[in-house]
Each structure stands twice: as C-alpha cells, then as structure tokens.
Length: 426
Ligand code: ATP
Ligand code: MG
Image (cartoon, rainbow, N blue to C red; front, side, top):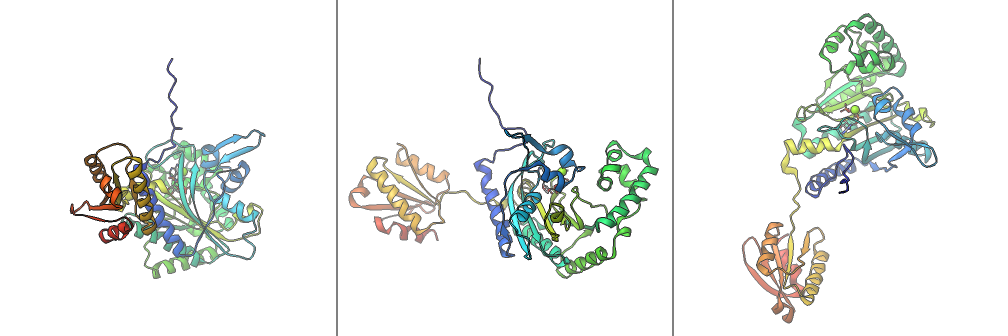
C-alpha cells in the first residue's frame, strides 16, 4: 500500500525561493527604518509558559479563549506557541531587569501562532514585526512610533493605501465606568444582539463595539460614547498626541469604536488599515499598555507598542507596489569546459571576484553542458557577465570576460578578472 504523503500543517506556509526575495526586501527596509530611530532588536522563545498569555493577553479574549496552540510537554507542564510577541518581551524584560530606571526601545520579528480559520491574510503560523517601548509615559513617544510606522509605508511605497485610525480607551478605571454604562445599554437591547455580542456582553463588552454586524453598528449609534467617560488625564494625553500628529502632518481618523482585541491596552490605541486586501484589512495595530509590566510582576513601567503582520504587508506590497520586489538575478556566471582543472580555476577566480565585490551574486556552472547551453543558462539567470575558462585560457592562465548585454568579450590575465568585471558592473 502506498504511504500517505506528509503535508504541511493547515494554515502554516512554506516560504518558497520565488517569494523570499520580496520578504527579504521588506525586512531590510523595515529594519533600516527601525535602526534610523535607534531601536534595538529583542528575540524571545517561540514557546512560553501558558500562564503568561492567560495573564497578559486576558482570559476572555478571542486569542486565549479559542486561538492558542497549547500543549503539555513531557514533564506535564502546559506550554503555548506564542500567539503574539508582546507578552514574551515583557516577561523577558522583567526577568532580566531591563526596566529598572531605563528606557527600552525594542523591536522584534518572528513567527506567531493562532488557531484561526485559514484564508487570505489569515494563517495559523504568521509573522509579526513589532515595536515595544518601555519607560516613557508621554504622548510624544506615542507620536514617535506612529511616525515610525508612517515611515515604513513610505519606504515600502504603500503610503497611499494605508490610513490611520486612532482612539483613546482611557484609564482602566474610566473604562470600567464605561463598561458598566455600555452593559446597561446592551441589556436594554438584548433582542437585537447576535450570539457573539450576547456572549461578549458580560465577558468582554468593549469588543461589541467592533462587531462587524451592521445591525449592531446601527444600534451602537445610540449607545453611550467611550469618549464621554474618559478621565481628564487620558483626554489630555490624547489631545497632546493629536497635536503632535497634526504638527507632523500625519493624517488620522478618530474612530471611537476602535478598542483592539486584547485586555492589556489603555489610553492610546491605533490601527493602520487598508482597503486593498479585502476582509483582512488591518496591517498594523498597537497601543499603550501601562499596566502590563506590573500585572506580570514587574515594577510599574509605562509602555507602548505595535505589531504588524508581515504576510499582510507582503500581500499589500505585491498588490500596490510590485516594483519593490528585489531582483534575484545572478550578476556573474562562471562558465568552463567542465573538467576538474578548469572547474578549479573557475572556483578560484569566483572566490577572487567575491573578495572584490562582496555584494554581487556570482554562480559557478557545474555539470557537463557545452558552452552554448551554459550561456543560455547564464541568460536565464539574468547574468550580466560570463567569465569563461576553456582549455585555452587554462593553458595561458587567462580568463575571457564576456559582457552578456553587448556581446563584447576580452581575454585578460586571471588576476585582472575582478577589475574587468567591475568595469562592466559597478
Ligand atoms: P484581526 O482583527 O485581523 O484578527 P488582530 O486584532 O487579531 O487582527 P493583532 O493581535 O493586533 O491582530 O496582531 C497584529 C497584526 O498581526 C494584525 O494587525 C495583523 O496584521 C497580523 N495578524 C493577526 N492575526 C493574524 C493571522 N492569523 N494571520 C496573519 N496575520 C495576522
Ligand atoms: Mg484576530
């Protein structure tokens, strides 16, 4: 009986060589922007103690209720594949004393796992690029990380396709008061609520605000407004943030129903959304979480961060700025008659070329094809130059440099190969 073929886990994708160039290009641009703001990378493990996410993300969030990959390890400890990276950053910061009287401006990149229904822009293993800043409480840092995200879009050429939604959800106490008022309102309109909203009404009523159901959205027009319940400090924080964004020329829409899914946020919350990706339109989401460090056992430390989904960024770049795709063309193709002697020379010259031009892509032909086939291969790979070592060249200690764009070729001494190539490609 034939064995059943083993396939990848549903919702977990291979990144094939044809796509890796665009990923690398996007990662390079994003890292360049992060570096230009002086942020440093942090890497934390992919698995953490399950209790970390329950406590940080919140027991009644979608993530903890139904999306986590949770297992018992061989020692019967409950561990979870991280569904997001903030909790791990905070855990690591507390564990290593990163928050004592110091600011931290950090970024991360890595996979996250959520058991969701796979579809375009939504996967079970996906990747997040994110930032976490600790130790700064003013609205100025809120403005800076929004400026930084705006710079990403510009550098990626997608700035015309993203809009910023902004809100303040106030202090925990203010939100508590609002929550009470909202639940009272919802109780009076139970007959109009769908199943999701009925379930959330008591567990996580603020989530009702971002229901996609149009009947609910209409009902909410009469509901109490979060802004009316904000504490004065949060109102002032938000006003100052809006001022800084106005001064920086950043356009935003205030969306009073933007609350974000996770428990740990307070005050500023924001999302960058696009209409170019269909249903999965949130590219980046973030906010302030001043209570989380102490909630996880550290000393109280103000914090703000955001995360963006790399897959959605890739889809958006491919949709609206396909020219960004980096070329994976080869620059120089080493052609030889293919016996051990000429191959050895080809390899040796290729090493010299890599010393002289480390950013060029230089590939050596192996196998027994004739010269014509090797040139055809060089063309197919997009090479601009072929460096040829035939029997003749081997005897004379020379190489022939062929400009594949013009067809011109010159024979030069082996040690002059690099300068001849550099004269053709800078
Ligand atoms: P959504 O409303 O789309 O479910 P979310 O609020 O659950 O998003 P966050 O927890 O804020 O998402 O994660 C930050 C970003 O990570 C999202 O804005 C999105 O770009 C990306 N993201 C979240 N879940 C997935 C997923 N399952 N697959 C791909 N990207 C995702
Ligand atoms: Mg989600």
